[in-house]
Length: 538
Ligand SMILES: *[C@@H]1O[C@H](CO)[C@@H](O)[C@H](O)[C@H]1NC(C)=O
Ligand SMILES: *[C@@H]1O[C@H](CO)[C@@H](O)[C@H](O)[C@H]1NC(C)=O
Ligand SMILES: *[C@@H]1O[C@H](CO)[C@@H](O)[C@H](O)[C@H]1NC(C)=O
Image (tube, rainbow, N blue to C red; front, side):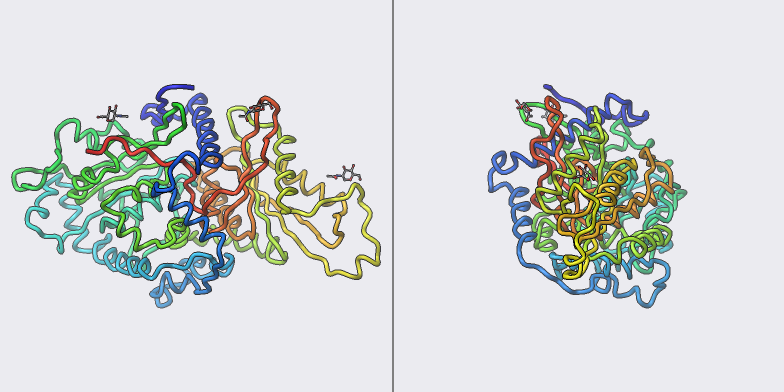
């Protein structure tokens, strides 16, 4: 496999993706995950900032931790006075998570409080917002305020457009929020019907929902593509904007908004690299982009990583995140609390099936590749991973109970397995195994539970998204996790939990068996890709 593969070209995205391109993407994800997992340390120098970050995270994750501050309080001191019933998960999720190893840096808390105040000042239904919308709608003069040096009386916005599956959406939304924090923009989200009420309003006393009628164009994923004339790169190519532009802004008028297209391009050459387009993460580009009051972002990935590679944001990021491997952990917990419908499912399932266990093991099995592995092979690998890492008790070749004598000596230990999969087969096999066979230790009782099995992923259906979010949260409440390495679902859950999972590796097709059943990634961060290439900065 050679050459430049535009795995996610604009054409392919606007149509439904055809089977070939989705298969290609999956292969690439496998390769990307493998490259990362197996050759990470030899591939990049230790001075590389991203690797340094991951190594630090590794140390932090393995080291002693224990930050017992109740994060809900820390995150939303104002909420007590508001309406706690509006977002139950904000108050209740924290007692379900294991205590986090990553203390919330005080400076980040300060920045979040500052952000919230700014959002209340500039958010929908404020006078400043109405001004900004009228400038946007009259397609006029973004540069006016910049020219007048009127920074205190204007507000800047970044509009997030959802695309792809729920996991991708959560990764790109958190990235966009980080971008908003760094650039003093207000994050506004477009909420299509399939996401309605999925997440709580994160900022007290205001809203993050963009009223669709306020925006001059139809707000949906199909409106924005790499070919949009508002795309930053197209404006640059067409000479509508230029570097150094706006320094004498009086002479020039910027378009009403800029669109930043941040979908991933994969390069298949000697080694697999994930890269973003030219001119998306260079300082000189962001100096220019920052001149726009309004911007729109559509992304399918965790581009937060790329922000860490930009000199202009590094200092601030270093202050905000002392433990670099916990960016999504902090921001995701802060931003992405499930709405009450989802929380109801989470709470009922947790109380009903998981709360009583002494230990909870979460498994997320995604067996959807170009050639899906037969379920027996996947199941064998799951058991091998569990055996090699002592995640589950071994069973005997008998269903007879241990002797009454042995039984008396010990108190039974209950292990609950949360099995998440689109198919029922892994649940059924594991359940049958622990139902039929006695465990070696005799005193461990294993129960296996699967909340739903939807068959196929359907990103457009609200109910499906609600179940998916409920399951991501349930997984994040487990003590230990087994995931499949190329799934954003697993990335989000591990980062919310702050736990490094055991990741099942792809099988070697020539013998239909994975040489190594599973490995642990170096950090809890979702991004397990190699360092993105930042192409050709000036
Ligand atoms: C990025 O820019 C460089 C230099 O201008 C050019 O050679 C390269 O083809 C560009 N890559 C893409 C993907 O546009
Ligand atoms: C469970 O017990 C049966 C015999 O009752 C045996 O054939 C089977 O191999 C056992 N399963 C495992 C996983 O050891
Ligand atoms: C797959 O297995 C074969 C046979 O053992 C081996 O020669 C080959 O190197 C393996 N491939 C990979 C990618 O590990």
